[in-house]
Length: 131
Image (cartoon, rainbow, N blue to C red; front, side, top):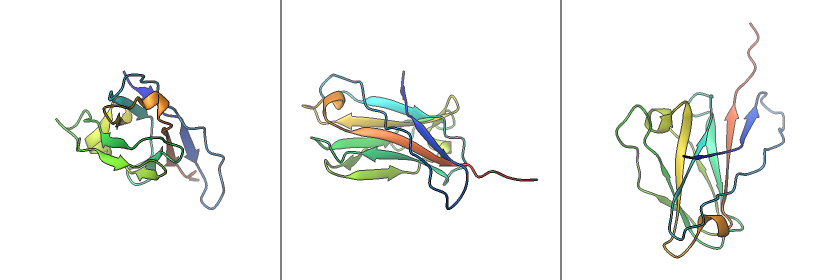
């Protein structure tokens, strides 16, 4: 079971769009990861995750979760240090399952995700096409 990430959709270039609120982790176990998914429909390169650890109290690992098309995604976590923000453009061939893109946040062994201050969001660019 994954936590669904709030998704901001941008439909017009050069026009500011109010961002959806971030999604916060609910996992209370120290050192226990939590999976997140977003229904990003935009083609690869036009959608991404925002991992916001600006107010965080601990470093957190971020990795892709294997999707329907491959046996394993790149599960080596990249650390998002406390005080930082990271952007992850996920390849749908690696981490799309059940029509959603999936990522995993993993805290240190002594930290719970729900209390460390990290949050996650997703953005997609879906321009309106006139035919």
